[in-house]
Length: 212
Image (cartoon, rainbow, N blue to C red; front, side):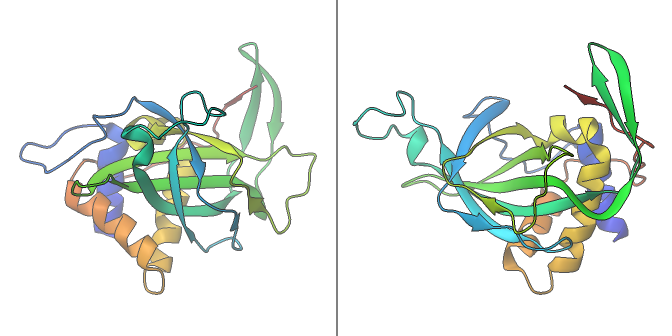
């Protein structure tokens, strides 16, 4: 667990380690809109499910061949996360509401990608994440991730500092799931081998502001 936290701490710092073998997502922007290949039933808290996603075609509704970038497949995992921290609901730079922790209740969906595979090319590391909080007024039992839903992903080096508590929780879930989930194990290995993060102490703040 210490090695994993050390790796995640390095991600949150967003530092490059000399000699690291990081084949980052240089061929795509720092933010990417992707859709899932199929509907995915979200497992209970503490479990993960494998996902595959692709880029949204330009001229999405037009009948035309896919571009090279649209043929690439991103793979990773999805999970529900619980809010074990106090959260500030922010609007127009003013704190509107402070929401207490709600452990044991799904607070949203986290999608994590770690591999990009394109035709006739070797797969490369592509560490991306998408945090999707639920609206607190709605129930989300037996959540299904729709293939028609568009998810906006950021590079993990940018997402981790913005959502440290969510990412920290996700790493703990992945570590526990790695014994039975090849996708979770593969994601953890990609973080450790890229050597992208440098702090051993991953301290999440007491609250994470949410802009609305």
